[in-house]
Image 1 (tube, rainbow, N blue to C red):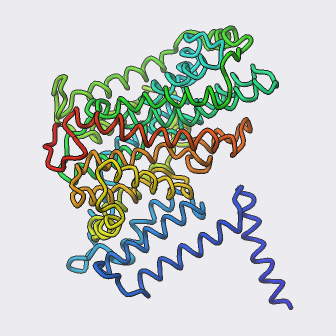
Image 2 (cartoon, one colour; image 1 turned 180 degrees about the vertical axis):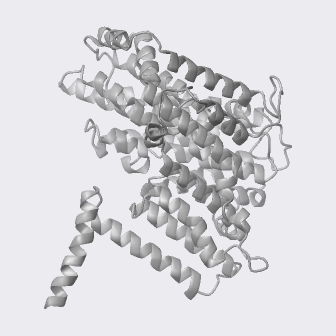
Amino acid sequence: MASQVSESRFGNYFCENLRKTGKKPCRVLTGFFLAWCLFFLFWTVLEPFPGLTHNGMAVLGIVLWASIMWVSDAMPVGITGISIPTLLLVTQAIPWQGGKPPMAIIFAGFTNHVIWLCLFAFLIGAVMQLVGLDRRIALGILARFRASSVCRVIWGMFFVNIVLGFLVPAANARAATLLPVVQGVCNLLGNTPEEREAKKAIVIQSLVYGSMICGMFIMTAHLPNMILIGIFEKGGYANVNYLNWMLLQAPYLGMFVLTQFWLRRCFHTDGVRIAGGVESLRRACAELGPMTMPEKVLLGIFAVAGLLFVTGKGSFICELHHWPLGVIGLLGMLLLFAPGMMPCSWKAVQEKTIWGTFLLLGGAMTMTTAMSQSGLAQWLADHIHAWVVGMNWWQTILAMMAGTHIIRLGMLSNVAAVAMLAPVVFAMAPQLGLHPVAFTMLVCDTDTFAYILPTQITAAVIAHGTDTFSSGDYARAGIVSVLIAMLYGVCVMAPWYALWGLPVWDASAPWPF
């Protein structure tokens, strides 16, 4: 009897702690134990599947472990990310040489230059929030747009997202930055049925669709971009810089036009006015006062970094240096934290820096390397190939896009999703006679438009927290938006890539950069 009481108290202890952190004990604990069971099952119990080595089985176990941890939110995403190299060490999934672990491979995600570029972006984004530059940019652009109607507000927020995309590196960080601004605009609306519908459109478009779509255009504004670039460089497709990426991804900005057209009809926002909107925004801008010296210095630092980004190796404007992107990021950090440069303490900066996402990105990039090194990516590609063999290029892309959206129904992190998907798609392309870069980008980019459930994207979770829309409202708008995105990829992006020398239907096309 005493033993049962002790066990009950022990279980209640864990459940109560989970509830205090806002998590569901059943989901978290089930996911945690399932993840570890599958890990040990694939690592130590099951015989290797035909065509897969013991090392590949261990990596498959780690991939399943990480996927379930991310889906169930059993551990913080950053801890899951940094644990991937740990499990690679424990399992020796990457063969040791001379009794020593291959640390360069196991921690490849944390030594890749793009991870340091992202850290620079995280830090400059944190400083920008501390000096108030983010709010000044948002309010200034909205005031310029004379946001007196729902349509004007949404378009104003779209351009805010583009500008912030250069400074704030992650969609969830931009959504968090813009949240108080969007809520302030929504508070100017009343509570009529039309105005409630208008609030839904403003929040979904501004915090979710706008932040995600703009991120695709700017290389450092969307973390899956970094994973793709890392895979391309390892595959021999180098010299991807800011300008090349913008050229390839620029048409995706047109997706916002289509989603805006659809959401206006979905939520019937035509004709809904915002009383006092312009005056309120002007008053808020006036309260900020003139731009401060720290804000000007911060813009200057970013201008210097931006100049180095667009004049690196492969630039068609002017090639001034051959520094990798990560080196530019490290130089930017040296400048940003020079004595007296910013009025922010390190403690304040680190509290605003999204370290968990940094660890997640490094772990995810390590996982892509392990999948390729162990042969797991090729093995998965061989099996998926059997499902799409015989299809032409656009049917294959649509089938892969549909499969991606099905997988994404249960995953919150698009970084994790692309980390698992990209190496497999990249390995599939040669077997299908498709260009590896164009095919991988088309399939993986559709992951950005995982708009069916609010739990698929962190920015959507932030938006859902405003209580302006239900999951049903979000799905009603999102299902059509997903279909639009899939067709957009085939009908617009595939021809655009071909125009720049990357026809998805020609695997032998030379790398144009």
